[in-house]
Amino acid sequence: RYPDGCPAGSAVISGGGSLQAKYVIHAVGPVWSGGGNGEAELLASAYRTSLSLSAENACRSVALPALSTGVYGYPLDTAARVAVGTTAEFLERLEEDSLPSVIRFVLFSDDALAAFERTLKD
Image (cartoon, rainbow, N blue to C red; front, side, top):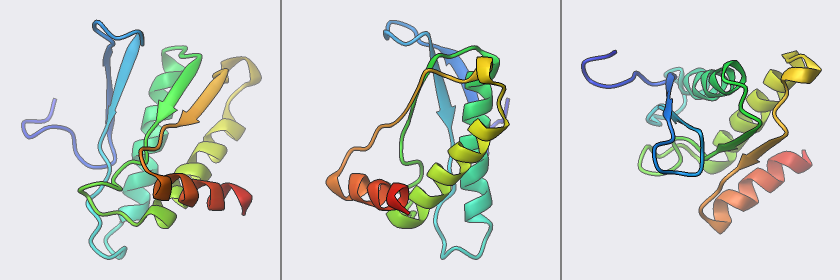
């Protein structure tokens, strides 16, 4: 436990409470400060840790947001490349029987959807 919450780049798992989800993974991305302060690695770490927790807990479906792109100010196109790239790298390393059935990026704006679609096309 961290006295001021979880540090950027980390994630923790909890029960889903009254949600339909069995678990909720709480991830902390970095605040964008221009890109020269390790933001990309911290963002990738938040995704990797979230995905690792989902695999360790045998989650069959995973929903991921566009971490840090709201009030933390991370540019959507840059964040999408980190999110998609980190997720793809993680999946390549998992054993076939450990793979989740579904991984979704849950995006809350047309701009975020467009950024992730551009990244997936590339």
